[in-house]
Length: 272
Ligand SMILES: Cc1cc2nc3c(=O)[nH]c(=O)nc-3n(C[C@H](O)[C@H](O)[C@H](O)COP(=O)(O)OP(=O)(O)OC[C@H]3O[C@@H](n4cnc5c(N)ncnc54)[C@H](O)[C@@H]3O)c2cc1C
Image 1 (cartoon, rainbow, N blue to C red):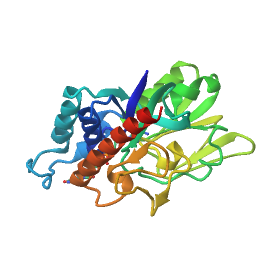
Image 2: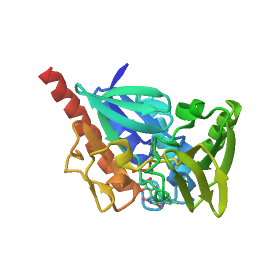
Image 3: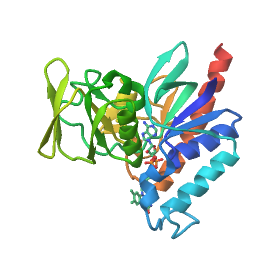
């Protein structure tokens, strides 16, 4: 099925975009990590969100998600891994599935943590961001799992279950990946392991890993006043577009991005 708009990220920006897409009569699919993995979930008090002083981050996210569900927004739990554009359609891979939409709102927050030395160089040659997609390639072989979320532990168990010899590193800060043609070893926190593959399971991806060619300025996604990026049908909102990194700014930009994405879908329909 092709959705009108696919939203990447179920935080305040993505949820605000999604309800405003629905308000324009369009279908919306939010692809997101679980709500507990949202950074705001840990906030004990949000003091400056208008009308709800003192609410916890978990309470705020829960009511926002319920609002979106009540408005008919669909949800898919998982991590968007890559996106490609063909014949006016976006194809976004989520785990081993592909979702299709006419427009995309990128509301993925900020990707914390820098890439490790060797990570970009060996991507596709031993480095992977998705255990369920690439795990079978490493059956019977040793792999390292660098996990930064609760879901990462399950992915390590999945790898073990299909016959990989999985070495789990819990939130390692300093790692180096090396080899000749393919990955041969990883060194994390001084521990060296000989491996055929390295699964790096962060909750968020760098926007340019998802959308090569996306304009970036000072580390943030470049947008215009409609929250349009330079890519056709791709809009961005919230922390990923820059500061202030605050909920009110995220929901405001989500509104604009959602409306702009809906208008883009209407214009596309008139063109066809
Ligand atoms: C501890 C803490 C306290 C805070 N307190 C306040 C406060 O008091 N007031 C205030 O205004 N702001 C506060 N903030 C900031 C606020 O949380 C952010 O500004 C806001 O959440 C940004 O919303 P967003 O939707 O842009 O991004 P996020 O809320 O970060 O949402 C993005 C979501 O997308 C998911 N995601 C990322 N990449 C992918 C992918 N590839 N596939 C699927 N899902 C993906 C992420 O896991 C995340 O759940 C606080 C933040 C923290 C961490």
